[in-house]
Length: 456
Image (cartoon, rainbow, N blue to C red; front, top):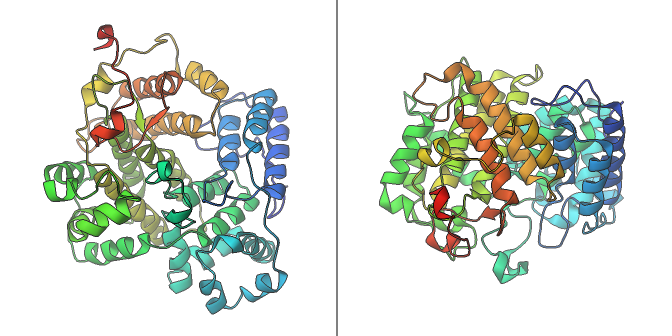
């Protein structure tokens, strides 16, 4: 049985999108490596706040049907650079029950292990459902401090980052992704990790999210996400607000130079309590639209690293909807924050033109591959799990968007989903860096090759 300190994958909880032939052996091996990761490794693999993705990668390939050998291989590859857990401060773990002390230590990476032990104790006493409600969804100052950190926030000062990594690390969506895996696969220990990870992230995104929430409450009607994406792209002040040399293009660019415009546009997307499933599908479709469509012909097909996280995190909102212990109000708020951050993310990369023809007309490297073929290739692909998360999220998007193929809010339709799956696996198997970083900037594409003329 899975507990706050024991990870145990189960064939009863294989995820929102999974194959039908997952084996007991894969569940056992996945559980063993996730347990070792939980006990031995820090949530960040270095002092600059780079995230340990093992708890994302292993459940993803488990859901896609990875055999025990592949699970073990990927774990061994990725554990090699992990960092050990920090020393535990037992007195602080006890004192974190005091809300003032809890808030005082937020955003400080040195206390990650203490927050982890604290949340494990709380889950052991109350259950993960009550802990998430109390410490993330309740709506008081402490809960909102954790909630906003779920969506963004670097965990270390930019002065610690190598110059070449400025602008590549911001912790966007990592805690909510981590939480999503814990909820989706029913793993309280991974939920504790997620809450602790959020606790040591910065809370800078909170100002934006809470201001949008206030502004949105005064707007009577909602626009669709794709309408707002079009508005953002057509607004030169907002589109050009982020600069190539900004360390964090949302915080230091979009929200520093055009905050009022970003708030105004984001506030136009609203989520009613009677439309949660449709709005999750809309959010997913829009994220896939701006991620898949942000190509730069004649350059190689590549997906934007930051946009990709918007897609990879989308799958968990379907899982949140199924949790009876979350109120409809809490589900709607989680979803609103996700949609608003996605809009800011799109704007922060210079709001590139979104080229549907690049998807519709894509010619796959292996056109005979179905989704199952793509799954097999991505299971073998050596990385830290970003590619497999993207492929699984795309397949899930296809499933939940089927009822809306005739809805103009949904620009990704029917056979485009499989084309996107091919684009994803082909692009990471291609030459050059697997992900383009900040796709709306010309500088981002300089190191990539032009496609052969036959592919144009």
